[in-house]
Length: 317
Image (cartoon, rainbow, N blue to C red; front, top):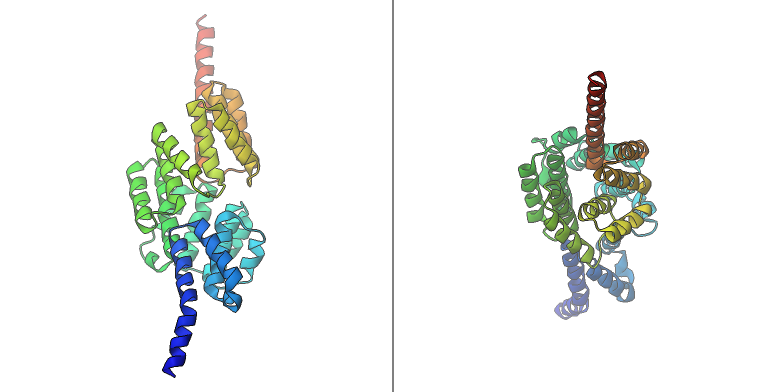
């Protein structure tokens, strides 16, 4: 009997070791290693490929790099974790209605409240999003680490939009402590640098993100990268970001936003105003929606002031 157990342990040890390699690669967002491990399992795992951990690793990989038919794959699961992944997928694709339809299935759980906060942020309801994500009575530590990280990053973005850069930095650091290798931490650090007009730091972080062996094509990041290119007068980088945006969900709205920012930077107030209005009509999300509206208000105030000044000049002419 002991001999049989020893034989089983020896035979299974490579698979146990490989499972641990998958888990470790996921924990540090090493997409290339996860891909390599899954290829090994595909060649040698046999029936063990039906293990939940292997299936989840494949779904995790697809969620991060944009796999095919992921929505239909996730829809087969009814548990909280996979339903939340499906919610995130729909939100990433700009499918707001489909994302919101999933929230009732998560009920009033911390994951469900996180989802509600993310929806509010996407709609530009920043203060309300922050309030939902700060509910003290919820056990936020009970949700998976990646979800805790996402909560802190969303709170960082909310604080940044509301002008509280110290709170934004605090939330970012909390996220970095949880998952220092999560690429979303770099993206939010990039946003924070832009918001504080730290152009050199923003450029450095942008280059680090792009230099990764992989990074998910992200509408927010590409838009902010384009804005940085305008600030740096880097026409080639601006052109690259606009090309990427063209292929992303709601890309047309964000291209108009970028073009509007560029027009305003050149002093073309009416052109910039028209482009930003059109971008809002098509649909912007989160902080960019808030920023576009603020810019429009500033332009309108400036134009009204110019009109009043012109009237005074005419009257006194």
